[in-house]
Image (tube, rainbow, N blue to C red; front, side, top):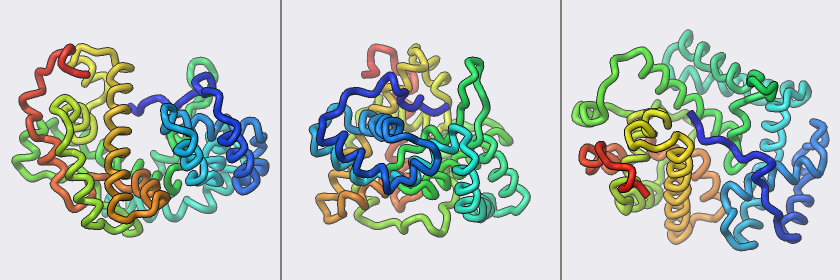
Length: 304
């Protein structure tokens, strides 16, 4: 289960400079083509700003707006809303690349097609009990390319598919057996850079045991938020907020380290969106698994 995306009710009032910058990006977003008004576009982008820079200063919020892939963000939101024109654009642009990525991940044509078709069903969405359309595209935030995000989702679905068809094995047993937790990256995924691996390794090494537990349980063990909540005696929504906070902090630290060694801020944003840290040339499993066994029985009061 994914953390819930921000709703319009959560959107705070933004400064005039940030709102002006959002308005300036409306034309390049092609949002009007899909029937998205300037006001709706503002709300869409403001929700992203709130998600990633709610407590940041104006300049950092401006940076978020300036680096967003607004055309793809508008396309994703329009598809989520069921706009036919948007879906035509989406299928023309991504249908072939998605099937190719699915084949490379699954290494089998039949499985690859099933994987891609399953993703399309999630992307198209279904109405919930209240009649609101629920699409996985709502979770795309425009911080990196839409194609890169789709590849990441495909990889995650492949992992989930594999786990559902195999016997449940503990994280410790898999670590001892040397099992890889990530699906093979697509050929077009940015090549691993030693500086990226170092930044990731250093950041993960700084985490407290309870933070490692959350990340290891969710990303390595592939446990659901509900499962983690039962283990920690916490409500699922509380686990979601804690996981979101830890993940955001890890990305922030990695991004800061990458900038310190010469990466352009926009490139940092793209890497944070597109790269799955489990695919890098760094022993992420060992790093996150450190003290993992000890904290499995962690109590509610120990998790902060």
